[in-house]
Image (cartoon, rainbow, N blue to C red; front, side, top):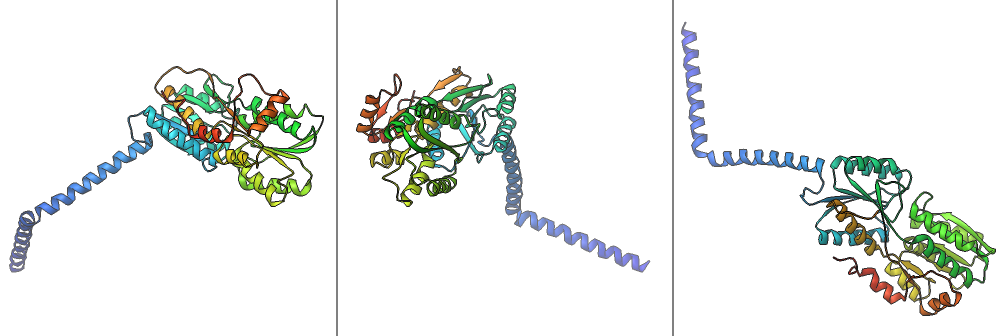
Length: 369
């Protein structure tokens, strides 16, 4: 009995001590303790909100959201295209999500599928393959999301196509080069990838031009959008055929590697180089005689224009099924005179000198509302 009474006293003493400590904690540390609890709760709530935002919309905004599935985001053309697109987004009050497919059809399909899950308001894409993307584009349309192809034609009513005059413009360049080498000799044409509409159209335009010269032998090389691959390819071409007379590259980003290889081989005075896209460094190369000519679509202009159309679609406005961007041949005056003398080209084509080409590259005023 005595032991039980002792234990009762001990328990009472412990209980009293705990109650006393609780009172002290409540009086002396109430403010700090409460603050810590509230901060923890607020942090947890914020994390939950952020998680929900990430799953539904990477931008976390009420503005219309445009998901953009790029072919590549490292080459100079695409970097400048993003800059122009970002500027248009400010003007038209939309949010953009840029994603790179790294020149992979599978990656691009996965990106578009993810945009569908995020329920973006519009999807812009620079298609790697004009046929392979049709199913996922139709899936997006079925989900109520407008889809627009940038610079490529996709044969599906589910897709709006923003286009350039690639085939006809490249044909003119080919005709000019063919005449400059007196209609004979070996030439090379570098293209991006079979199945990419832009690449296919530019290659087709060159083929049409070359078909007019029976004594010209042209070899075609697929180089993707990879400058390192382009450099290696051209080095191999020059090693195998140092007498080649001309090389045409389908894109300025690749043409820089062409010029590098030709210069390294000491053949700059022998080989005519022509290009396409109208980057500033390409206009400068025309000015100093490194290139015969290039064709300005203009990366910033392309980016701005496509986001402008995307913003209209995202806001539910009507847009034509096919839209065309005005392009400009960039060449020096004597070459422009040569084009006129030869009677090549088409009605309404634009030719500007390199300095004007540089000005047009950054001039987005034609698109502003």
